[in-house]
Image (cartoon, rainbow, N blue to C red; front, top):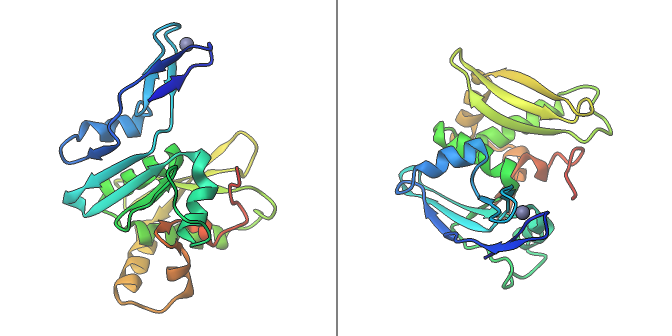
Length: 213
Ligand SMILES: [Zn+2]
């Protein structure tokens, strides 16, 4: 695998295309602190972050993720919706849930690590944005950060004000009621609509803030 540094140097790196998180738990820290897939350029010493497609197996959590580079977002969505055939560049196995880009990867990992149901969390994010005021025509992104000690979840909301990230705290009761409804198989359009094939995201229904890059 070749990495290109802004100093015009290119260098080879080794990277496992499949990582078993149970066997390599150190990767959790790397993903959380942003050092995952960061390589030091041997010429200028700069840390270069490169998105490389990676399959994450996490047997103890019953999860398999496919980390897809942001550059392949549109291709990934098209494959998940059945509008595009998988090719050599991007193939998504039946057991893989794709997460696109570093932010989605870190968020999903944090969610699973906290033993939360990603499905319920994405539905909750949709409800939060759907009920929010004054967000019309704004490119909003909401990202789960962590469960807090006092029975609240913390989210980061991007795009309300330029260059500012807002912190939103939400009672975990909201999450609990959604998780219970999903378990009861309550028929709610939203519960299904957060899925586009294997790709699970509130962005599948909340198109106001959709990231099209
Ligand atoms: Zn360099």
